[in-house]
Image 1 (cartoon, rainbow, N blue to C red):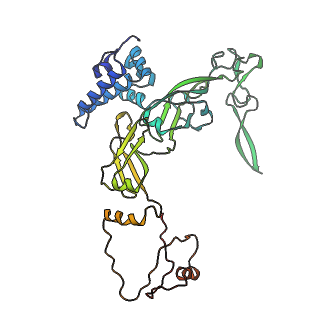
Image 2: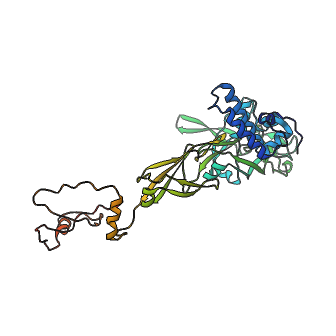
Image 3: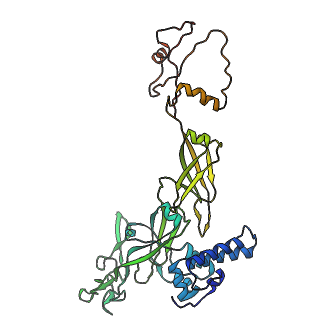
Length: 419
């Protein structure tokens, strides 16, 4: 184990530096229940709860714990470029970054300028992540190819003293060209210097750096560690500061990845809540639902409703605490909402004799008030809803060529097509 230079985070959790992952987890859960802001609505409890989360997130992560053991909180701050506790918290939970060789084709946005040096361009690129990654968290290593200052010439481009300002453009990289627009009217235009090709400097071919060929930068492949924290959301940004392309006399820009959540085959996310649709049979809808569900972390949960509680078509029921983890507070989770779709049986699924038995078990039919006087008796049938109506359709509805003994005319009627 690395030498421990700072034990404050261990003291917050009340464990020793040799504590196992299981000991850390037990200590965090116990203390989180005691000082949760819902139970202690005061500023002191909220601050303690925040530090408790910070300590657990650092010590439960092997890489962050190793950095803390060697360098303490100062090492965490310097590693993330932070200068206060709030910045550390952001770095540990939300300032992780992702890269890949695929970033070279990403979108670009111009970075701002500092008072001392120009700033390079930021590179912004979408990063696709699955719902499982956002639920469980993910750590991976990706490859980045970028420009770095040439170590052979230190970014000069050639031997010391061999680089001279271009005499044609006076080191500006462009020339002012006067062009006549119409007789008696001219305009000035900037044109790239053809001598130095816009670089503003001239280097003799024999004096150019052999390593970068006078370009001052070379390509370098770097492997960077990526942290997608639990509870991160669509559109959230992950930034590596100063990891953009390097150039002489210029501050490197940032690499910014924007999370894009992949569509899931079962769940749909809304904030910290999860939504899904479940198709159940008529028996389950009337007599009680019971089904197994594979969750995003691999757990199997058994979802049940009490016998006798009717599930209506399109109704939504909820399971508390089975939604997405909260960002920076993963032990707090949203809810799972299940919308039910009822699957009715096929036609003639039961014998005529048993229909009366079934009817005795179901709620009673409403009383039917028959029309007074003569009336027409029609039956329901399936119709092709893609065909138009009209005289032909109306004629077919009644044209069966027969009358019953009571003088009531029978024929084809209208069927409500099941959606």
